[in-house]
Structure formats: C-alpha cells, structure tokens
Image 1: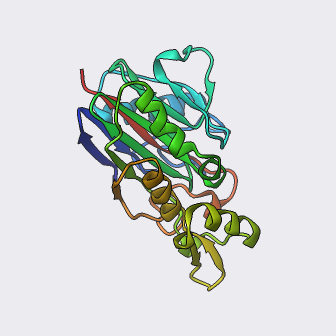
Image 2: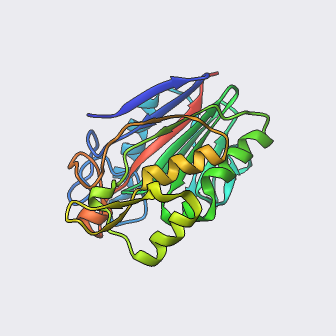
Image 3: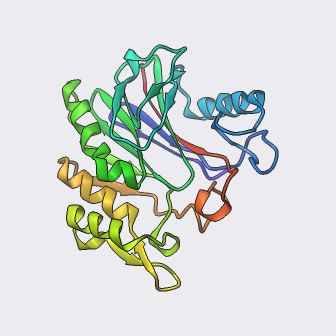
Length: 239
C-alpha cells in the first residue's frame, strides 16, 4: 500500500490509495464511498481498515460533499444525518474528519489544537472552500500553520474549458494555467490550491506530487469514468 501518514502539531493525517481493501471491481479494492453499487458491508470493512491505519480511536464523521464552500465542525454533526459540506474541522479527539476524492484535491490544514480536512475540487476552489476552512479553524481558536496536499489530478491529465480557466486565472493568477500532455489547455489544481492557501495565510505547504489519473494506485473519475471508487483523506487528533 502507498498510504501516506503524518503527525503534525498533535494531529494525524492519512491519505489512502485504492489498495488494501475488500471491494470487487470496478471498486477494487479500498473503496471508501457509499455513493455507488459497492456492497455496504465492503465499504464498512474498508473504512474500518482505514481508521485502523490512522491509528486513532475517533469515530468517522459522516459528511455529504456537494462541491461548495461549506465547512462544518465535527462536534456539531449528528451521526445519523450527514452534513452537506466540503470541509470538516476536528478539535475533539473523539472525532475523525474525512473527505473522499477521485481526482479532486484533498487538503489537510493543521495548527496547534486542531485540524481540518478539505475537499477542493474546481467548483469548491472557486467558491473559496480553502479560505473558508482556514477561517473556520481560526474561529475555533486554531491558527492553521501547515497544509498537506494529497493525491489529485495534475495538469498533464486535466484538460479544462477556456472560460472557467479564465475565471481561475483571474482569481488565483497565471500559475494555474497549464497544458496537458497533449498540449491542450489545462487547469493546475495544485497551483490553485496553493494560491488559495497563501491567500488564507498558510505558507507552509507540502505537496505529495501524485497525479491520480496517471497512477493506477488511485481512483480517478477522469481516467475511469463512472463507476469508480473513492480514496480518502482522514484527519484526527491524538488524545
């Protein structure tokens, strides 16, 4: 397995890949989303394994991602009703925050006393989900000092329409404009996320540098279409 785990400011961060689970094709094997036809018992087991790899005792907080900028506090979520949001702040060690991706950028924001998991697809980036997550941490008394950017689609594989690309360039600067491996216009999601983090006052950014579309170790909607599974970013705090 190529899972990546880090301990930062008392928080633990885990990026999974698609290996090490029990799901059958096309969800093979560590699919972590309940949003498809993968049997629920397979997803439950896969999530149990991911939580075990995180190594914390917290409970997975349910959340329904909608490609927006809403941020929720893990302590405010009723376990029976997933919140509609694209980022979750974790202060209490009894919670584990998670975002699911299959090309969008998973971003962990960490500071002393708290951590946030952010689902940063192109609509969320334009809507300001990264900046909103940093502000939500500050509202909880935590200054976000470091960000970790996990596996996501890279410009080599991410052809993007010129109209929306212009919107990104207007907001985040020319670094977001790139070209695919075929020479067509592309969006650089990591560059946009880094620009959003700088705008939010987070200057220490670590990027794993992995393209989900290039690497068969990861689920990729752009590469595989629907159905495909989801990997996860999990965050929690040590007691």
